[in-house]
Image (tube, rainbow, N blue to C red; front, side):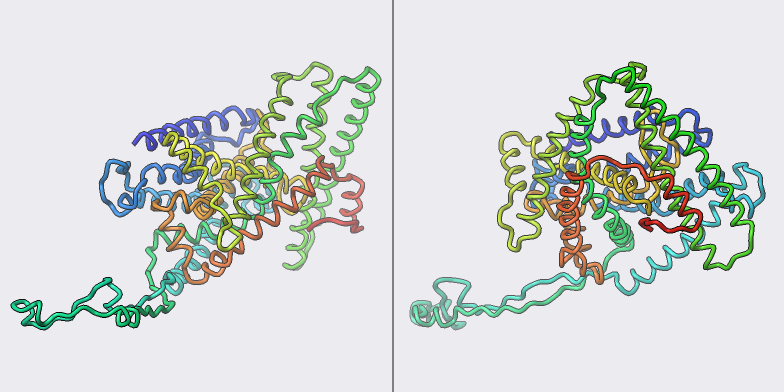
Length: 535
């Protein structure tokens, strides 16, 4: 009971922390940020944290095999975790498919020239909301059509079992063969089997089979939503496991240094020239886009051009972001930065060292327990059990730490991929400078990857969380669903996240600084001269 209360308090603290992050990190000049959008972001973060911290809560609630079966014992928390996970799964689905997409569509409607041309040049909320709902109706039609067809034809779990058939003689060391009259004359009609007869009858026949278990619609929504989130989780999570500690340590290595007046003057001049260049590049990009879209083009040409425009805008955003970071460092060197803590680089070094240890432990757990078959060692599972033996709350909090850390790696990986590759729009989170569209986009990724994080941790810590409700749902019923079992049984996602984590560790260790794109190359690309590019 103490463990459940501890996790509940941790969830309340994280909910309050989410509210502070949105309020303090939001850009006060972002006029499109309304109260309902801010509330949506906060609620999304709370739901995602409720999903991730639901695993340690489930562990604390179900400490015995009888807890998940509904048996009330002294070591059970008394919470109905089956209903809890159904509610979490439905909330994640609603946020990821309806609430956040509508908010993003409405927010982007203010800036998209094609939408303004189509719907008129007014930017009032009603027109933006109508545009958002049109896009959302198309999205919902695709989602529910796919969901309905898959649940109807693939909504059954094929759980593997082994059938054992043995003779009755194996049920006891000594077996008596009796007749109905043996009740009256047991000594005269009963006989003991000889050792040879018992050995001969001691045969067991085994056969592999499956049990078909229908999946409820609520659980299938959770399964399919998590399956879609797995593709983002393995990429961003794999990169984030390596990027989290290396980014923090690099903040210490690249901390502001003392500069002479000449060096400060030269850096100011370079930033001014770079700023003027980017401003002119943005103007040219806007003019060329307007001129191109003003003509008549085929659907295929418009699709290709839209993709090229998105890549070019992402490159421009990356250059602006890195230039802003360089300006912030210059202001620190001049002593003009506001709210700068000189201990920040050293805090990053300490936290980065701890994160390096956690990432290293995660990689070892994946290799030793999840990839090797049979597992070489329980590793972290044994560590959590040992902590429970010392104090019952420590093991649960350790699971919460590793789960939340893995979820945080998703956002770090998303940001790192956005800075290095221009196929994904960069949505940086900066104190006092974060726009609402960045909050919405990052919230959608956080929500969508919440269930995969829980499922991954369930597989990694199934030795410790063996009695939990979520282990039965995700570790058995969802794992063996038709079609989805191809990915889960063969550990395809596990291998991908491990490979990306190892490759990212090598790559980010060698190329640890984020390099700005070249404005000249972008200009040449806009004029039709292709000089590289990732998309």
